[in-house]
Length: 106
Image (cartoon, rainbow, N blue to C red; front, top):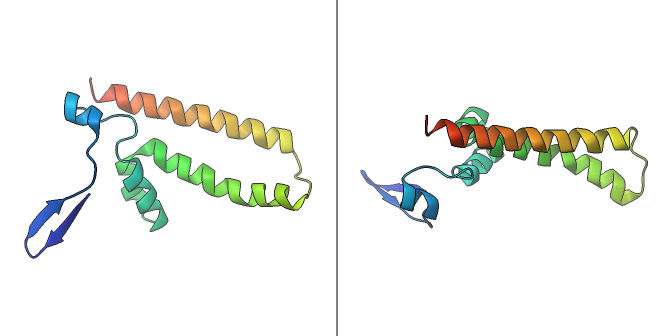
């Protein structure tokens, strides 16, 4: 993360150990920035920071009403189907993350 003071940029925060050692981004590099951008509704910036983290954020947001209904004790229609879709979506996120990681070496 960096901040601007007058005309100079200063970096702060903990660097990625994987990137420091290898020079390549790890699968989670840009994840925090992606979550911050999504919280600001800047979807394009979030997508450019980390595609998998952007999709994970959307999945987490979609989980909120589902989990609230379960906490209250309500019935969720197609509960098993929704759970399976969530698992498939998580697998898809993992595939996207691995694909992006491998693509930087090509």
